[in-house]
Each structure stands twice: as structure tokens, then as C-alpha cells.
Image (cartoon, rainbow, N blue to C red; front, side, top):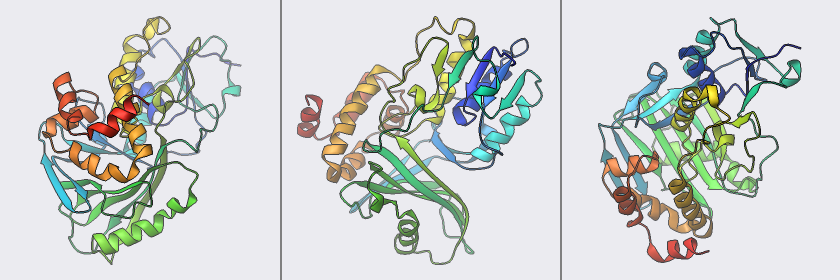
Length: 355
């Protein structure tokens, strides 16, 4: 069986981002790469969104950018504007097409369905696939979104609704998320922060139908696209092994308090490529011990006091837009951290800290 210098297990966002970074930085001119991916075809299946706190390779895959966003509690609404760090949404279909078109020009890159088809004994392996099913009793962010199109112009396309807690919480944490791509087209998602064992929370179609009708006042629309997913809000127990480096969510690239992953993947990919010639000898990339600690405390509060979370999230955004965006994007300084922490209810966070 054929040998490869590098193997990427999983040709999704993390795997393809790394492959693209290797290719555009000329690291595959004299090296070979195998990508293990089971899907038969690439098509739009996700929408990845984030604040653009640094430049990335995929501006041409952005559906739309926004400078204005709101967050809603059951009895109030707060609006923020930021022109320095726009909020962006990536079309995964365009992302896949761009990367696969680039990779197809290099004969040193090959795709396979199974790792067993090649000899991996001497390869450096980058793994983005969970080795076993993750614990459904732990905390997850699970969601379903639909892109709807209306016959009339309804949406204000210059502002997104980042979190709308004016909905049934069912003793967990629940919000809706609206990204208007144009005046008559928007992605609307129902999102839960809970375990995955309670099937009663997964009537996503009905949740979306009721929200669009009762909260947005839209009765006539068609559905262009549906996406669905579940993000673990806990770090996998897998460790990097000799010549196996975990990437993506498996590699700890998901910010646990938010679920944001896309830009972290891009940063990790650049780090790997920069150090590719000594990848076994460099420090393992992470999002920062500070954020790991703060997220751990935050999620303890969320699990013990889900009923308080709408107000807690709402208050977090009562600071400057730069501060909250940098904090949620792992780029905040100590003063900004203190500013965010000061918005939190002291007693329950202190109890979570010493729990």
C-alpha cells in the first residue's frame, strides 16, 4: 500500500482548512498528503459565523458581513455596533469548492474513503474525527437552522439578532438566531444549550415554525436550505499521540462558552504549517488557559442555573462592542476580562469557582 508524508483524517472544515494552508504555503511540493473522507460529494451543509478579528483565507466564501447586532431578553433588547470587527457568515458550499479546486491541481494530494486503504505507519497524522461516540449526558450546543425566502422585503439586512431569549426555555437554555442575508432572505436557527438525552427539545421544525410565525410575524415563506448540528461543550479526553495531532473540535478548537470554532481552526492551521518541519517538537496549540478556566466556571453556572442565563448573557453585552467581541473571540486583555467578569452575578459565580 502507498505511503504518505501527511494524512488528514476527516475532510471537513478543520481537515480541508489545514490541507489548504499546507498547499498555499508550498508545503506539498515535495511532500504527499492523503485526506480520509467518507462523504460521496461536497455540498453546502453548514454556515460558519464569527467576528472577523483577524484576516483569513475565505473572504470570497462569505455570504454577508454585518456591523450591527442585537441581543434580546424576554423584556428588553440591546443593540451594539462595531465597524472594526464585522460579523461574517461563511457558505460551506463555496468553502468546499474553493479548497477542492485548489487541491485538485496538486498530484501529491489524494482522497481516500478509509485509512485502511493506505500505509500510515510512517506518516504524520492530523485527526479531526472523534474516536468514539461522545457522552450525550454532558452539555452540548445543538441546533437546527433554515434559510427562508419571503415574497416581500421583510428583513433589515444591516443588523443580525445574535440571541433572542424571548422563547420557551423548558428548564434549559434556549435562544433563536437570525442572520438576514438580504431583505427577503435570512437564516433562522433554534439553539439549545443542554444535554442530548432529552428528545423533547428536538422538535426543531415546530420551534422554527412557531418562532417565524409568532415572533417574526412571517406567514408566507419558502425554505431554501436546512442545517442541523450538535457541538460538544466539553473538551474531548483524547490526547495527541506520537505522530498523531488532533485538530478541529477534537483538538480543542471549539470555544466552549460560545461554540465558535471556525477562526480557531484557521489559527491552528497556520500554527501547524509554520511549525510543520518540527511539528512533534513544538508546544501544542490551544485557545489559552485563561479562556479554558473562565469557560469552565461559566458552564458550571449554566448547568446549575439555566434559568438565570438569559439575563447573564444579556448583561455580558452591556459593555463596549470591542470588549465583548474580543472576549468571545479569545483576543481580550486583562482589563477587558475584568470588565466582562464585573457584569456577572458575583455569588453564583464564586460558588461555581470553588465548586
